[in-house]
Length: 169
Image (cartoon, rainbow, N blue to C red; front, top):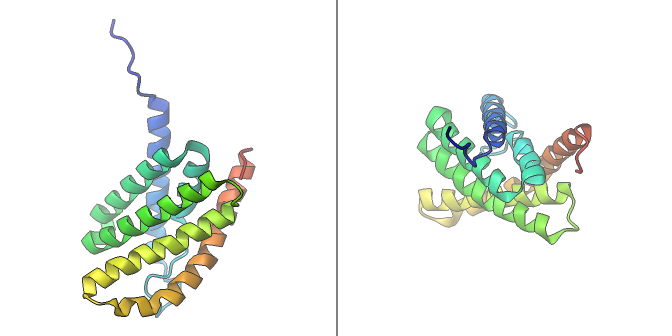
């Protein structure tokens, strides 16, 4: 008989389902105009799943879910530009949220707001590269304010899910 693999298949399946949920939520959100005339302003409902994974499974798992979701979204519906914006934004966001989680004393809302602001800053960096100058930074105040607002909403949703499941949040 062959020895069982050391890879926890239940954990892989769980991460796969959470990634699929985040991908589906991101697709639904992409179909909804949040604020017409304000490109890049979105609710970030797929990040509810990322916060859930970060809080329960840690940074490595959250990184895996984010990277898989961004890659699949880029292949399925966002295209190369959308992939670049999402990847850089996701990396900035996740790094900030992991840092704030390790600091301790930062609430879920604080982590999410920090992550949302970092996500928007990452996307602004990509925009500056695409257009070749820093004019995109003029849009920073709108994106940062909307990111703080939507980050708080995302955290409230994630906190309600964590509490409903009996987890801390």
